[in-house]
Length: 315
Image (spheres, rainbow, N blue to C red):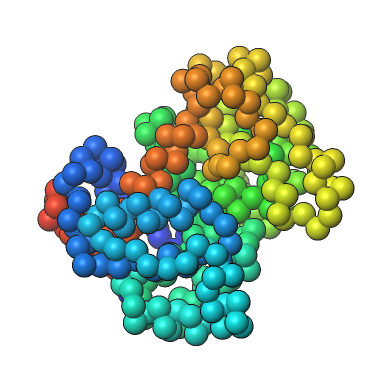
C-alpha cells in the first residue's frame, strides 16, 4: 500500500505514467465511469476548500465510486478533541481511500502511519500540495508538449505558497529547467528551496521583484495570491496583497505561447481582462484536476485501466 504525502513520493517515471493515464481519461472519460464501482473515498477536509475537495469528490463519482466525509473540521469529532490518528483508524473501516486537507503541516503524514487505506495529502498548512502539483504538471505538459527545457516564473507569495514549493521540487527533476522567482522580499521563496532543491542540482534561478522585466523570457507564468490566512497580522497582509497584478497590458509583454497558471482562488492578482486571452490556462488547470485525481485514485487502489488492461504502476 502506498500513500501520496509529498510530491516526491512518486518517481519522475511514475509521475509521467500518472499523467499518461490522466490524459487518457481526459480524452475518453466515459470509458472510466464504472472503474471504481463500490469503492468509497473519505473526503477529510479540516479547512475550507472548493476546487480540491469538489474535484476529489467529482473524480471518485466519475469513476463510479462513492464519497463520505466532512467539509470542515468543525463538523467532525476533531471539534471534540479527536486526534488525526484516531480519526483515520476509524475511517479506515469505512472507506477504501482517503483525501485529507489539514491546516497543520505533517497531519496527513501522521494519518498515513496509522491508516489501513491509502492516504492522499490534499494540502497541509504551508508545506505541500502534491495533487495540485500533479495537475499543474499535466497542464504544463499539455500546453507545452514537454516538461523539459522550460523557463518557469513563479510570482506572488512564494513564502507560504505550498503549491509553489511542491511544484518547484517536482519540476527540479526535469531536464534543463530554469526558474524565475518573482516576489517582494518579505514573501521570497524559503531558503531551503534554494539550498536543498535548486543549488544541489545546479538549476539556474533568478530572484527578482519585477514581473514586467521577467515576462518576455517565460514559457510559463505561475501566479499566486497573497494568502491572508497565512499572515500573523492584518497590517502586513494589507501592505503586500497588491504587490503583483497581471492585466492585459502586462501580458502583452509575454511571448504569444506562454501559459498563465494559477492554483486558484484568485483575489485581484489576475484581472478579468486576462481570462479571454488564449494564454490563460487556470480554468483548464482546474478541470485537469479532476482527471489527474481520477488517475491517482485508480492507481493507489490498484484499479486496471480499461484502455490498457493494466494499472499505471504497482502500489
